[in-house]
Image (cartoon, rainbow, N blue to C red; front, side, top):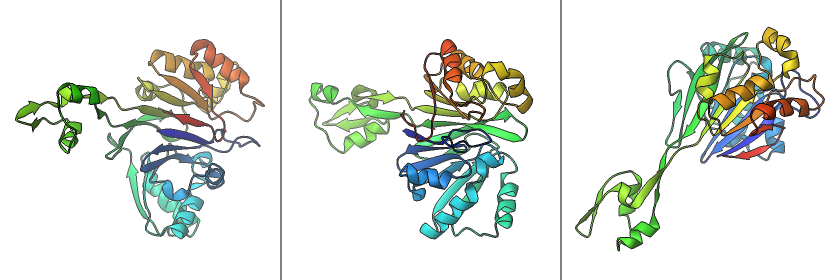
Amino acid sequence: MKLTFLGTSAMVPTKERNHSAAFLEIEPYGILVDCGEGTQRQLNIANIRPTRITHILISHWHGDHVLGLPGLLQTLSAMNPGHKITIAGPGGSRKHYEHMKKAFAFEPALEIQIVEAERNPVIKTDKFSVEFSELEHSVKTIGYRVKTRDRRRINTHKIKELGLKEGPWLTRIQEGKSVEVNGKKIRADDVSYVVKGKVVSFVTDTLMCPGCYELARDADVLVCESSYHSKQEEKAREYKHLTAAQAAQLASQENVGKLILTHFSQRYKTVEEILEEARSIFPETEAAFDFMNVRV
């Protein structure tokens, strides 16, 4: 998996930070998480063709998370009519989507499936699944947990040790099935091992709530909003956002591999103070910046 941050600002963009968006690549799929204003331009700068997007995950329908959506869909309609897109979002997303089309007097020439998050998994493909948890913000908001499928890896040393030759039978082994080779039964576990799938979780605009813990639990990478330093904890609570300290405590408590902070308030000229606070609690923390790439 490759994660590219396209926008890392909060409600107001800055010269360095665009509105919220991130692109998660799981070949042959491309998952766009939120689509703030200016996302098309950010995709161009990051050299990501819009036609690589197969799924769009909307956390909530505040403008800084969705105002790039109508323009992106219009571009995709022109570039590749009939392109298939799945758009997932919280309850009420179909209504919001229909209002958006009316507001912009535009009917996409795309095959669009709108999925309202009601049960898990929200999305399931041959390569990954997406689950959601409800968060606590000023409007209906959800976070996402993207997990790649477990896969079997062939142990070539073990095959040689058993005197076997590689062949089509390995396909069944990779499916976890037993096979018979040269009159001998070979179990999948005899010549292969399971590589656990990776988990990338996205905790967007929210107060600390049960959903945060569900999303973060054992994630390899946790992308978590960190709008404020704890000095502004009262303001964070007022606007229903997290502080750097809260994000770090969440990562520490839920056995996260790496924490990446994002969604920074425009009040901060730099995020060094925020990053320092988080690292004092959870050292494996980074502060996202626009066009930052992360291999998972």
